[in-house]
Amino acid sequence: MAGARRYFGTDGIRGRVGSAPITPDFMLRLGWAAGQTIRDKGGDSVVIGKDTRLSGYMFESALEAGFSAAGVHCWLLGPMPTPAIAYLTRTLRAGAGVVISASHNPHYDNGIKFFCPDGMKLDDEAETAMEELLERPPQVVACEALGRAQRVADAPGRYIEFCKGSVGRDVTLHGLHIVVDCAHGATYHVAPSVFREMGARVTAIGNEPDGLNINVACGSQDPQALSREVVRQGADLGIAFDGDGDRVVMVDESGRVVDGDALLYVIAAERAQRGELRGSVVGTLMSNLGLEHALARLDVALERAKVGDRYVLERLRAVEGVIGGESSGHIICLDRTTTGDGIISALQVLEVMVSRERTLSELAAPMERYPQRMVNVPLPPGGNPLESPSVCDAVRLAESELGADGRILLRPSGTEPVLRVMVEGYDEALVARTVEALAEAVSRAGSDTID
Image (tube, rainbow, N blue to C red; front, side, top):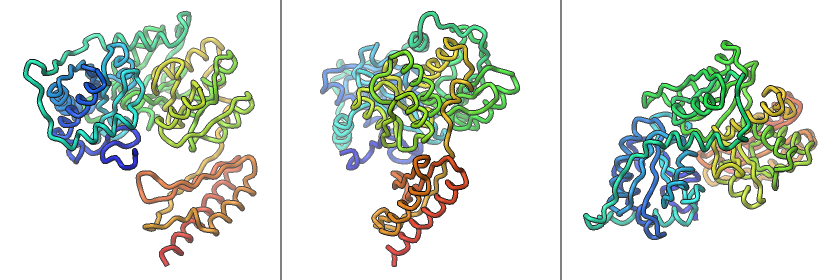
């Protein structure tokens, strides 16, 4: 189903601005198709939010025109984090939520993501229905039935209160100095306010978007500037979001980056100690082996989903779990909200710091990150080295050498013609030798296929 679709990928539609399908005419047609789908399901309104990319204004107008032509009313939020659109879709009782964003990509990319009325990501069936409608020319409803558009002036305040409500009413951040890096993205005007209103002293960086500087040398993808600022300021910690605010990484008091795996451990460990953890914790195939071992010491199982927050969410619902996420910092707390939310995830960690009176470095210490190396090996057309006996033999030998303290993953890339060879283990030198040997075995097998 999803593989046969023309436009939708694993996380909506994304690409280079000006290149199909990321063009104004396509967005108008998409707005109309989405509007028809909403009306078919009994809805009559949509929430539209965006990050800070300059192209977002163009696509917002095009989508608004398409929805209006379909007779669907638009609630316009302006620049807001992706998880805020999910929340406001629910509270405004809208038929769908639309996010104009390319997340952590550069400014010259953009994309569209959809949420269902319950704040969950759109399902395959609805995306397929939209794709079918995109093949038809848009038809405009009668003039008196056109959709109207209205700005939601208090959207930031609504979302700020929602975020603060994700932790206990007695939680205060008084005495903490936090550096917040907003990646010049969608959190720039809400994240600092959340932490300040909870009592923290906040130094904000990456909070001056100009439409082009989103994710440039800042944010969760590039937290070095945050690390330097935490050390320079003598702050207690730093928090970095990505361009659309659904990812978070943190920096401890010494400037060390604490990634999504470690944050996931801190949140899950606290839930487990409180007796509030249901089901397994869900990571991905790329989640560090150290996370699995640290959780095992708490008698908590780690389930691995395919890479992508969509698959993490699917697995969470299948195992009736509440906590899941990726190394990149896309963390889902289903007992607090419906999707990955950088601000809410950060607040869960801060709540543990305050209640346990521990530093971030102390809380993250039990999750010892194992050395991990990955090599991309080009794949020949039509070749499948994973079926090669020599590659299977090399994997078996490597597994025996690594033992229980190691892990091997060979998987084809979903976006380029390469096989990703990943090795983890306790011994960094052994990991390096093993990944090189496996990459060589895969490369030889690919050459044999060509011959």
